[in-house]
Amino acid sequence: MKFLFDEMLKRLSNWCRVFGIDSEYHKGMEDSELLGHAKENNLVFVTRDVQLAERCRKHSVECVFIKSNRVEEQVARLVRESGVEMTFPEKMRCTACNGVLEPVETKKARGKIPEDVYSQGKKAWKCSNCGKYYWQGGHWKNIKKMHEKVISALE
Image 1 (spheres, helix red, strand yellow):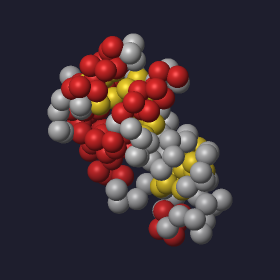
Image 2 (cartoon, one colour; image 1 turned 120 degrees about the vertical axis):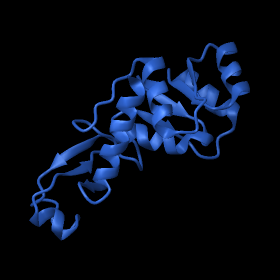
Image 3 (tube, helix red, strand yellow; image 1 turned 90 degrees about the vertical axis):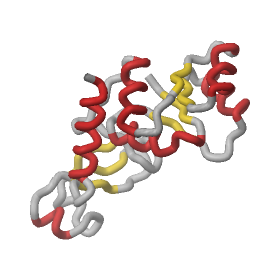
């Protein structure tokens, strides 16, 4: 299952990518272009815009309407409404391009990741699409905390 997010939900699309959910986001596209893209590519459209959600229904585009301002509740609603599975931390996606993150040996990533990640043997990943590197840095605690909040919101 793949999702297309409107411009109001860029932050949500990034968190969904972290949690392994296939998420497209296109800055600067008109609503009609987004709807057409969703329909042509069989994407579930995600929006906070009531009128845009109604247009989705009229054009037979599957849609998830997001009400909350809180990211953890937004992710939980998307998961609940669509039935998509979060695959974090086993499978994650690149926040830059939505490519699949592949585990990489820190030895092979030396010079591309911080030295402490390498020396402490922390996990690292490389985007299979754009080549960007990711690693378990200081932000990892915040990512895990957000994941826990989403799980709590689902209960």
